[in-house]
Length: 442
Image (cartoon, rainbow, N blue to C red):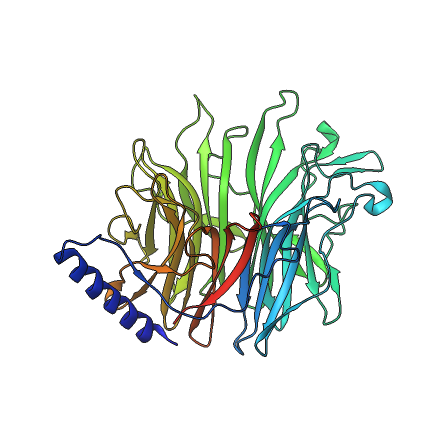
């Protein structure tokens, strides 16, 4: 199971597709093999699971996390769950992760948990997530908290929270604007990365301009040091004009022993402008922008993105929609002086395929890209490409759990022992709820 075998599978699929085309058959991508690691990971198959993520250590142990609603008959707020793959089976690590209503002296009013991120610090898995509802997280000692980001780690027997001691509820959120507005800014979509043996957390934070009620977004990055969360650099956003930024997505990664962060951002000034992709790296305690915007079209709408390293280079994949057309996946890498494009769109069908959120992962064996994609009126399939010395392979379809009725979304990737693993959410009847699956790629 290595990059050579994957490229051989890609070449075989390309030959078969070419023969089919010459014979007048339907043009399409080949089907990738690889073993499904047992059945659904869902903690409740009659509930709704979403936003899976995966991490792997060098010994072949996998850790999968996702957000989970229970079946309708069980009144329980959504929470985060983690399972470990070892010795040929999935083992659940503890129970639900996240706060119950009434946590911290009845302060947690709507602590529904969403969008986990997972990283391994040594042998310990760390998970970040955010909690909140339409009215925020809750109120403690007269202070109202917007949606709040948290981190916890598995100590071998239970999940132990790694609180930010500066906040009453232990959330990573800053308290910017607290005196003026009376509440803690909202945090969402936290992402974790281990850089040079240190755990970093990045998230999108929503601030409010005092007096006007106008909200805007910034990126905040902190690292865990001696049990405390320490902010790295200043708040990060491209606009640098208060009240102007709307941040859609972010990614953080270790590039050459430094934290790099990528994000997609739209501007509100003079009406909403198409979102751009930017990248920055932490240098001498502050964030330094890396090159220009990555967008292919100056009027393209950039959305979800991913970032990974290969041979010391930063690679960024993102979803972009032109002013007229379909959602496409693009990749660029930083060559030390500029962002270099990897050809045109990498969709299975660049002209009509609607591509969803992409994931990217790399090791010394190469780079892997995965994304869901469906044509209008069709269920989304899951695709993968590999990148090596000869460039990008042809797209291959990853077999879903239900090849007829399944629809895939929000995939993620991890690599262990040169084997890439893909995790994804899939909706298919019955029971017509969303499940989580993992497949080893050949």
